[in-house]
Structure formats: C-alpha cells, structure tokens
Amino acid sequence: MSTQGLDFLVNRSDWHTTEFVEAPEPAPLSAGQVLFRVDRFAFTANNISYALSGDMIGYWRFFPTRDGWGRIPAMGYADVIASSHPEVAEGTRCFGFYPMSRYLTIEPGKVTAANITDGVAHRADIAAVYNQYSPVQNDAMYSADHEDQTMLLRGLFMTSFLCDDFLADNDHYGAESVLITSASSKTSIALGFMVSRVGRVKAVGLTSQRNLEFVQGLGCYDEVVTYDDVKSLPKSQPVVMVDMAGNAELKSTLHHHFGDQMKYSCSVGATHWQATGGGGELPGAKPEFFFAPGQIAKRSEDWGPAGFQERIGAAWVAFRDSTDAWLTIKRGYGRDAVEAVYRDTLDSKVSPSEGQIISLWDQP
Image 1 (spheres, helix red, strand yellow):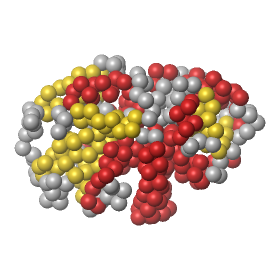
Image 2 (cartoon, rainbow, N blue to C red; image 1 turned 90 degrees about the vertical axis):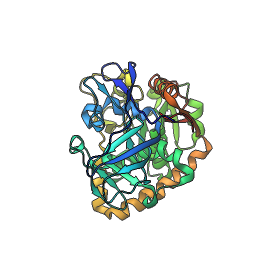
Image 3 (cartoon, rainbow, N blue to C red; image 1 turned 45 degrees about the vertical axis):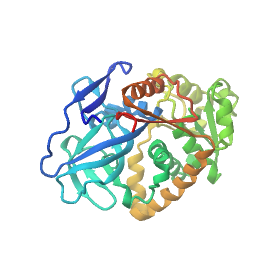
Image 4 (cartoon, rainbow, N blue to C red; image 1 turned 30 degrees about the horizontal axis):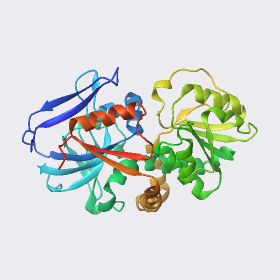
C-alpha cells in the first residue's frame, strides 16, 4: 500500500475547480510533533458552509496551503503513527477536525487525558474547540460501533445542541415557533430533534417540495412547510429563525412576512450557497451569525466542563440512536470517491437520507 501523501485542494474563488496534490512520505518529526494518519472522514453540506465562512470563522486557516487554494476541514478519525511528544503515544486514535488529506502533523500544546490541542502558530487565534483531538479511550461520547455516525453527526449535533440551548437560555425571545430552513439537512434535523423533544416551542421545518416527504417522515418537526408555502404561516405569530440554507431571497421573504414578529434571526449554514448574497435592511430582528464556541464557553462556566459534557453526551446518544430509522451510511475510498462526493454535495445531489464517509486511502 502506498505511503505517499495526498491532499485534496479546492480553488477558493471557484469551488468547482479542485485538484489532488501528491507529496512525499512524511519526513521525520521535529521535537514535540505528532503525525496522524487520517483514516476516514465525513463530508456533508456542513463542509460547504465551512468554505463559505472560511475567512470569517477561520476554516481556511486550519490547514493552510498555497495561495488561492484551500483544504476544507472535515470531522473524522485518525491514528498517531509517529510521535516525538512525551505525552502522546503512538497508536492513539483521535476524533477531530482533519484536512481532506492522508496525513496531518500537529504540534501539541496542551495535552490532557481528554484532549490533545494543536498549538501550531497558524491556529493560535482559532477557537480552542476547533484545535482539539480527542483520544477515543478517554472520550465519553465514543462508541466503536458508531464511528461513522459520530463523524457525520457529532460536530453538527454540537452546533444544534448549542443553538437550541442558546435560544432556550434567552426564552426563545418570546417566540412560539422556531423556523428551521433547509429542514432536510443533518444540522437542521438535529436542531429540530432538540427543539421538538422539549416542546417549549414548535419546531417548524422549511424544505423544498422535493424533500417534503422525507422531512415529514423524520418525526422531528412539529410542522413542515415547503418554501413555496411559507407565506401561509400565520404572520401574527412571534417566531425565531435559524437559517441553515443561506438563501438571501428566502430570508428576505420570511423577514418581510413576519415583520416585527421575527424576534431573532441567525445564520448557521449555507446549503443554498449559490443563493447567498446581499440584501439591505430587513424588518424584524437583525440577522446575525450564530457562533457556537461562544455558547460552549458560557455553558462550560455555568455548568462546569463535566456538567457540560454530561448534558451534551446524554442528548447526543438520544439523537444518534434516532438516526437509525432514516440514515444510510455510504463509504467511499480513493481519489474518485472523494471527488465524486465533494461535487455531488456541492451541487446538492446527495440524498438527505445518506451519510457519506470517505477516505483518500484505497479501500482496505
């Protein structure tokens, strides 16, 4: 089996332009470095959102490459195959953000039983949660039988858990319903699950006619409405909106329909990335970006790190198990599979019932 390095690069000004870059087998490590062999990773519409907000949040800075090009981060598992750090053992398997590559070298700063934090200079000003690698032997949320589901859903579930918690922490701004766009996306499904299971407010999923039947069958929304019918929603009802679609026209329609009854509006994703763009002032609450690490910091202080992990762990298991009813895992290996999954996701051709797990290694 080849040990040659391989990276999948995306042109930052034209995401349909990609290339694979071969690299020599990794060089010997400098003192304190750790080398991961990236086993496999998940790819969803969430990863396209990373490209869209790559400069604002810093996703392009996770794994820098040559000017004009980028490596999109993906959540996956990797194994330490070489270590010159006294606190990181070879053979350690970790969950975290990896490049779409075969290898990743990190420079651990803080190392605990729960997390290995990359201290490399170009990631120094990025939120700590993005730089952490969790050894599976000390990960309370780890299940060897559910690695694929974890890669696909854990990161986006964290975002949805925190968004739901943020809204609840603010009494949903007095709203009666949470409008969730792109209701067929996995991040939206997780948010709908969290909102509806508590039942303080209604979870209203907004979706395309094409995905209507699928979304209705999930059972995680109290109501499902197609984009063409959003004006049928009672405009006198106070609402908050969590926008996973990033569709500027849809956002404008909803804000104008509800007016001052739009009590809070935030952006999380951009599944409709080709429809993002301008727009001036909108009626109702001013749209803002939901920054999940800020809520992590707040709740870690409110509940303590252990309390935070206990709450999210219990919610995660409940959501993960619920996906058995609708989620089909698809695995792919090698360049062609990675290229195909990337392009199909970019062009919204992946079925919402499928979860794509890919690797730049040939099939084992």
